Structure formats: C-alpha cells, structure tokens
Length: 354
Image 1 (cartoon, rainbow, N blue to C red):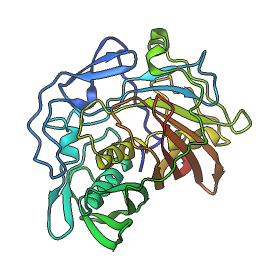
Image 2 (image 1 turned 45 degrees about the vertical axis):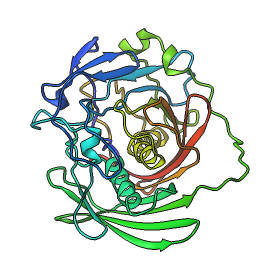
Image 3 (image 1 turned 90 degrees about the horizontal axis):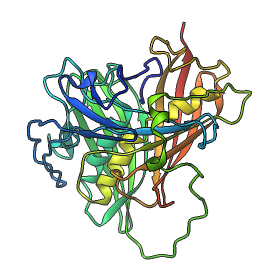
Image 4 (image 1 turned 180 degrees about the vertical axis):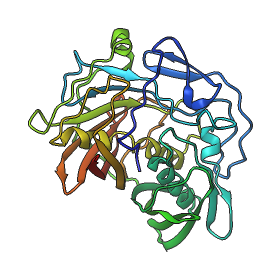
C-alpha cells in the first residue's frame, strides 16, 4: 500500500534547516532539490547481501511537475520526511530496513519503519519481499519482474516474516513466491522472477519525457510551491517526480531493484487522484483534508535496465481512469541519461471519504 490519500505531509518551515517532525530530534539539512542527513544512528545488523551500517537516514527527495502542467513554469518540490516518528526511539536506516535476518528455512524476518500515517508503506514490504526472494537465488540471476498483492494493512509495531516458496529453479529463469506475515495474517502475496544474464541484442524504443533536470529547478519553485491540479475533464492527468535514495547501498542488481521497488509505490495513487471526477482541493493548504480514502491494491514492476537508485530517477505516472472505487496507474522510471529503468503499474482503491 502506498501513502494513504487521507494524509498530506508538509514541512512547517520551508527553510534551509528543517527539524523533521517524523524523525524525533533528527535534523535534516534541506536544499532546493537535495536532502542530506547529519545524524548518527546505532549500527545496523550485518546483512547477507553485503549491506553495511551507515550513519545516514534513508529518505528520498522529490521535485514534481504535475497534472499535465509544463515543466517550464510549474514546478514544485518538497522535503519528504518519511521514516520514523516523534514516538520512535531512533530513526531507521536503509541498512536496518533491509537487514533481513534468517528465521527458518527460506524464511526471513524484517522490521518496519514507523510512517506518519500509522500503516506500513507498501513499497517497503514489496521491496523487502523482493529481497527475501533474491536471497534464495544465486547471484547470476537478476530480478526482472515482480507482482505484488497488498492483502492486509501492515502493523509497523511488530516484525514482518517473509516465507519464500522456491516455485522453480530453471537454467535461465528462477521463480519465487513470497508471503509476508504478521500476527493478524498475510499482508503481502508477491511473485518475483529472476533471469540469468544473457548476451542478446538490445533496443529502447521509448524516450524520457522532456522535463527539467532536478539540478536546474528554480529555488523559488521550492520555497513557494506552484501546483495546478485538474479534474477528469482537463488534460490527461499525470504525476512526475525526481526521486532518489540518499543513503549508499551495495552496487548489485538485486539491491538496485529493491531500492527502486521501495520508491515506486509513491506516485501511482496521486496519478489516480488527478483522474477522479471529484476535483482535488488545494494541497498547499496545510489544513486541507483529502476527499478520498485510498490504498494500493496490487503493484507490478518490470525492470529493464537497472541503475542505482541513489541517482536521481524520474518517476512519470498517468492514470487511465477510475471505476467502482478502483483506479489504474501506469508509469516509467528513467535515469537522467534517458535510460528506461523500469515500468510500473498499480491498481488503487480510491473511495470518496464520507
């Protein structure tokens, strides 16, 4: 499940140094399109895939062009304080979040970050499920797709156990099924496929959208966000964001796929909201209440050309419409050099709040 659409996160002080309310006493240093951390956290548990403890809190930074608005005159960006809360004893690092510890045969246990909306973020549990699947394969196989169903809301207050079923071990492809469980039942049903690297001709027939690079977005656009949202009768709705992970991680195809899966659940719900016949309110107003209740129902990712998620990655999503409380969004992930990193599709539950 992505961020529930009933939550709107906004920093209270759009200045150079922002005490992030969701990270306790942690201070985030914010620049127009860059977020860095300066805190020290406890060492993470050793990770079988090579993750090492660091002192940087994971976060991603975003700068958006939305609702079909030209990138030349309508840009905004927001610091995204996503991990931890004032009630947490310590912030959660990327290392800790993806330090899956063995809990039996092909079973792994992971923690969850505490998010402001009180539920486990779907991108997190899907990424952890992909990592659990990958830990049961040989390193010669790289992830090329995953399909996830978010079955129940996750509880951040207890560990998540990932049970991996080795569906098939072929010479070219490996298939895994993963169930993520908590005390109240299964919260995720995920299938993932891995391919042995093949030396075959390649082609890319699609191009990155013509949008401004994150390094050239005007400072004023960050200080005074300008957002134009459209109803169903306006131009085709879209949601775009430059996103990156600010904490380093091992340079492996598996970890690149895990990191991109983690961030890929952010924008689909927003794209569906823009397609809804009920027009969205002014989200610049910190007191605004979103008119929808939303959650991700399922999520699929195809990995085409994996690059590091610590590089800025353009997420470009659009929705085909909504029906019977469900909306569909499709999008692409792009490296700044124009490489098509991944394709993402998601169905979203979007009900009018009553």
